[in-house]
Length: 149
Image (cartoon, rainbow, N blue to C red; front, side):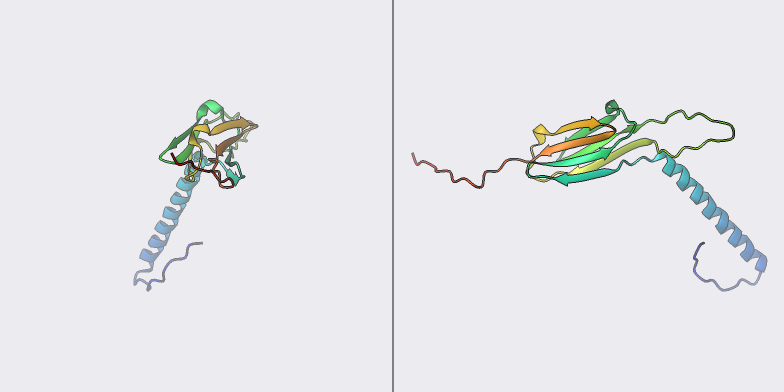
């Protein structure tokens, strides 16, 4: 149901009827465009966590080959991108339904300052990509004696 601002009645009732019909069809067309677009947009789910040694990013990528995924770090931003290819679905008697979303995706994460960018690793198991971002080891517990020369 659309909520629209109240307008004073127009003298000609037929004009108002046409306006209402135009609004209805315009809304219907927008809904169709959004449904079609959302079918082509694929945004993988992401879980993040942190331990004392590293940060972890887990990305759900079911049915996506590792060759179709890129992981890059640029200007302290980690970007995971790729493509989920469209599968040819088989049409059966008067039945055809696709609920999976396909298309390109990209997720970006700003990295904290003290991470070891050179040793970031990624593994893929059972459709879940895990990116491990090690933290830089900072020695704070030990006292270091500096010799004067």
